[in-house]
Image (cartoon, rainbow, N blue to C red; front, side):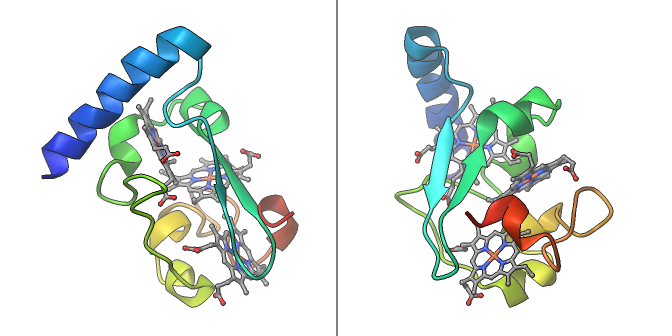
Length: 100
Ligand code: HEC
Ligand code: HEC
Ligand code: HEC
């Protein structure tokens, strides 16, 4: 199952990537009660992160999105796997970096 989703993501990249020059899943908007969070594939892939860092252990697609709380992120889930103050700015602060 995991492999299939990864392959689908690659196929999607090939098809959509060539047609619109979008990196990976493009900009993904995630709604939350604190305001929308836009995740940028351009920025994350552009800084050298490989697809497999996130797919599909951490994330699948926005349709299959599993809601997580900030508390879970602080414990290392979802964005919090990297946004822990070491690999990247922490989910414990800088709310405005993510929430618009
Ligand atoms: C830093 C983490 C990260 C990296 C690296 C990453 N992605 Fe994603 N990707 C995400 C997130 C987050 C989502 C949204 C998932 C969600 O809402 O649960 C997503 C969604 C997607 C989607 C579905 C888009 C949609 O709107 O549903 C595709 C396709 C995708 N990624 C392909 C790729 C490909 C191909 C690469 C490598 C070039 C890549 N991703 C690299 C985090 C990442
Ligand atoms: C690295 C990006 C990031 C940072 C930094 C961040 N958030 Fe979030 N936050 C998200 C994402 C993504 C969601 C949506 C999660 C979901 O729906 O799965 C979310 C969801 C939420 C929610 C709704 C879920 C819940 O836990 O009740 C609240 C409230 C929230 N954030 C508050 C904050 C506050 C306050 C801060 C600053 C201390 C903050 N966030 C910092 C990315 C971030
Ligand atoms: C695999 C590691 C990884 C994951 C997972 C990850 N990020 Fe990041 N992100 C980074 C790194 C590294 C940076 C750049 C370093 C910094 O700014 O501290 C960054 C930078 C950012 C930035 C600033 C640049 C920009 O795109 O505007 C935002 C916003 C951001 N991440 C949001 C998110 C959100 C929202 C999620 C979860 C949906 C997420 N990230 C998941 C590694 C990750």
